[in-house]
Image 1 (cartoon, protein in one colour):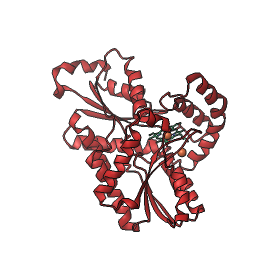
Image 2 (cartoon, helix red, strand yellow):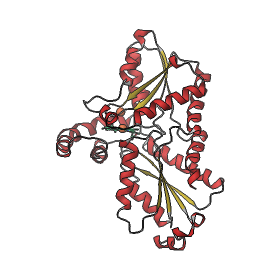
Image 3 (cartoon, rainbow, N blue to C red):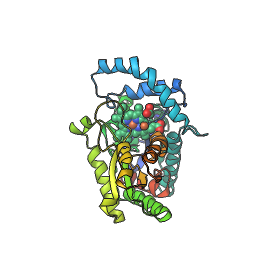
Image 4 (spheres, rainbow, N blue to C red):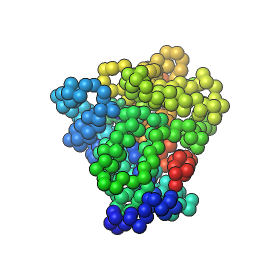
Length: 339
Ligand SMILES: C=CC1=C(C)c2cc3[nH]c(cc4nc(cc5[nH]c(cc1n2)c(C)c5CCC(=O)O)C(CCC(=O)O)=C4C)c(C)c3C=C
Ligand SMILES: [Fe+2]
Ligand SMILES: [Fe+2]
């Protein structure tokens, strides 16, 4: 179908003549778990000014002079430990989420829709995703970044990438950008369900840790709301489950570089538990809508080792919501008012 088939669905003819494209996005992974592929991926990722806010010239010198010489090899090793026959878990799970969401939308009676998955860094790119929707003749686009808690380096950066593509288009589509959904009742319910299932199967641990991906503290100081949205997410889930507040702790993981990041740090917190007599914990990471390097390697492997090395005895990671039906229902609930 030519991109000009959209002309038969003139955007001024009213919503019900529209075909709506949904672009489901996440962060993205390297194409392969090799140092070579990591160099390409990290060069794109770490050149994003939303990710590293150091004066441009200084940062590009550090990035190309030091980081891209050292980090790709180290990161490739980490990716090798989680890589599957389907490739990157993050990309594969994002495709499964997209397919299930597309099915749910169609089964719910919204016929004129197409759902496409794209990644902020690496492949499939946001440009390819938007072009695929345009080529299907879609005149309205909903961008759904799978980051429940808005942050500048994730959601804000996705917006930049969409804008960078659309500013090259002559005919810009009607655009709806979802900038977060951490308070959506079905998202909170899905998190509560997965925790309740774990507690029923494995018993109540001494601590339930909510570990969110971190960011430099400076971002919070300059107005990024992510830290507050994470705290709010924990509170809503704890209220939904009726848990005692003393059972729960909110921490931040995945520190990169030497600057201070959001605290308390997950690894230091876990290392401090055994000497306080806390030797049985469960950990969940609500900012990741799909399991990825930061959960499968950092939480499942690295942080488990830290906890056990410090004397911890029972450690369980509660999987991300991935393609659970209650998660897909939540994502549908987020976009339904726009269909
Ligand atoms: C350098 C600074 C970084 C900031 C700020 C940051 C914020 C941030 N990231 C996510 C989600 C993910 N990050 C992932 C990997 C990852 N993150 C950074 C750095 C920053 N992230 C790096 C360098 C990497 C790559 C791996 C490595 O070399 O360590 C991933 C996993 C990707 C995968 O392929 O599985 C996700 C997801 C959020 C939510 C966030 C801020 C809120
Ligand atoms: Fe990250
Ligand atoms: Fe990490």
